[in-house]
Image (cartoon, rainbow, N blue to C red; front, side, top):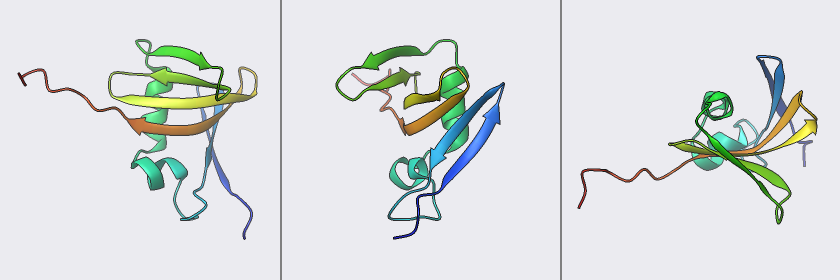
Amino acid sequence: MPPIAYRRIREQGVTFVFKYDVDAPHLLHIFARHLTEPDDALDVWFDPTTTQSWNEDHQRFERLSKTHGLFWLWLEPFSVVMVITCFRLEVQDEQAP
């Protein structure tokens, strides 16, 4: 099995680390599993309206915007973030009964 590869993106003083997928090593995990891109994760991270909590059971932070969820943890406090996953939330149609 080839070694796991990562992509690093530096934005506004923070480095974000994205894992490539084990089953599709040419794709980032967040794309292979959820069809999301690094820009989606960065949008959630820098959105001031997100909510954030610590999930004790999974030992990770969970940040939610109106459209996406971002699970992450610090690799180096306040400077390097490991993006565990980023996914779309199901948005309810406000017009539906």
